[in-house]
Image (tube, rainbow, N blue to C red):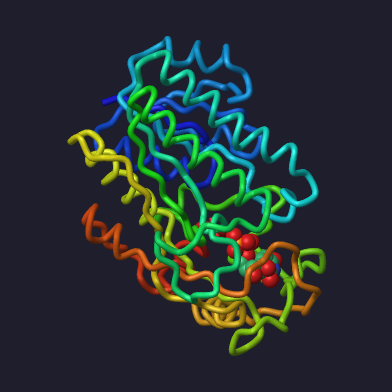
Length: 322
Ligand code: UDP
């Protein structure tokens, strides 16, 4: 089977390409390299192109018969989406629409979509199921929700079946340390904590808010290892290949950790002290996001391998040290 991985030069996409290749799939990456890196494309061939360029997608889909498309390409910095909504809607909604339209033209009928817990906004419940009301609070969350909605119509009109994964906080790196989380600028908590350990003043860790309604006042998130996310995608591929119907799944570990708890875990794993400063809240951050992933476990027979926060951080640290 040949899989088109849109966004395969990015953090999660690159891990996916590795796992696909290890499982005998042929991989083609379509990526505009805006946030991803050419060096990450090691397990398939790279076609440089943008999802806003219909002709480029057509050229890509003309090259080979693809069995399925995985779509990781997106702008994903929540606070940026608030200041640049047009850019986020164009990239995340129009880009996905262009990709689906091209798939319809070329008869590719299986799609795996990277969505986000941000579609839920700031839910009242602390553990979120797929039945929790969708109510995105930011353009980023709304852009992903709109793309999810579009998928329903493309299934009716063009028979494209899809699996949607709503990611909680992707974290860690593949254990061999070849690839890992590497954004520029880096906005995510775990890599920022690790970077702060090098003692340079401009890398000092900021904690965005300690006045949230949580036990220690800092935000609580559900950290899920990047390889566990990719294994779920692999299961989804088999599921769609066997005729499975379109569906949507949360993907998280089911345990929430506050920022201070993540810092304590980094200190345990690295043996180093994390220095930080408390800053104002970051716009768009809900207090608590924790997944219930029972549906994924039951329907796709998925189990996370990296269940402990320390294990996840160990892999991120190994990559960082390399
Ligand atoms: N965060 C922080 N300092 C940082 C990066 C993140 O305090 O340098 C906080 C952020 O405000 C949020 C949590 O850590 O409450 C997780 O943020 P991240 O950007 O990693 O993921 P998100 O939950 O926004 O997808």
